[in-house]
Length: 327
Image (cartoon, rainbow, N blue to C red; front, side, top):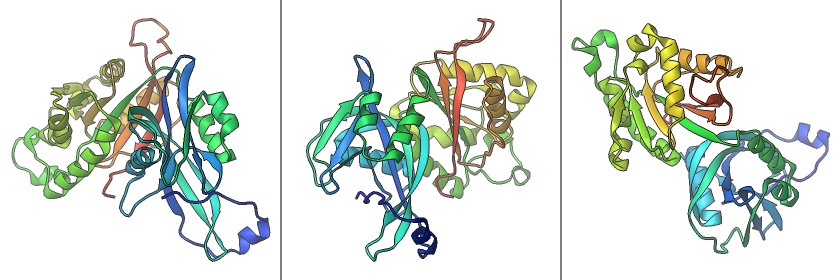
């Protein structure tokens, strides 16, 4: 269900309005390859006689990523594969009682899959437009701002989903071989929630540190896709600490491969690895969180090359943190 858009109002009215919980929504810049570059989906809503990007309110308990994919399908008729979180926009919307509340919309980039548009209750027309054309077609400045964020992305990019394994209990309370420490019941619930999230990004390659808890975290999506999990010791804590530069180079080689990659690693690896990749690319990130069951979506540029010509032709261009889906 799509919410109505902001209307103009004075500052005094905004300051005196009663506070209300924000309306949460999600959407996507849905794109496909065109003869002259990416073509973006812009939809017309007859209820408001406006042109906008596909978006809509979150259902109860729904994550923004799930809502974005669902709304794209409902409004455009196309399936899609997410690439990364893009930006968040906030704006006031009128309430039925005459007041206003804030609407908070998370946008993702999404490549169009199979499907076909058919007029529906919310959208009566869809146009595939180049970015410059879409900019002139959209009815609201905040949608144009989303396009600005989209245009800042690399022309050629690759996505790596870097996951910290789900909960596996305390190391001090496990008396066996630590590489065999399994997920707890809480970790299994995290794993299932992660599976629901990660599949939206369409991973085509899966890597794991040689830890049972890491392999168990990505096992459901490996089983669903028929992808074999490749074990990489450099993504384990002791392997990483032994040669962090080699681990960063390995991550760049993973990113340089075909399709979206999924990597499951440990808490002693992820913050330093992401920071190292960001620093080498001149990308300021600040503190790098890494709670169990969380995901970093790492976007690498394929059209920027290493200075000495000796490394993979990719560089980190953006990094976005998706918290534990059960948090």
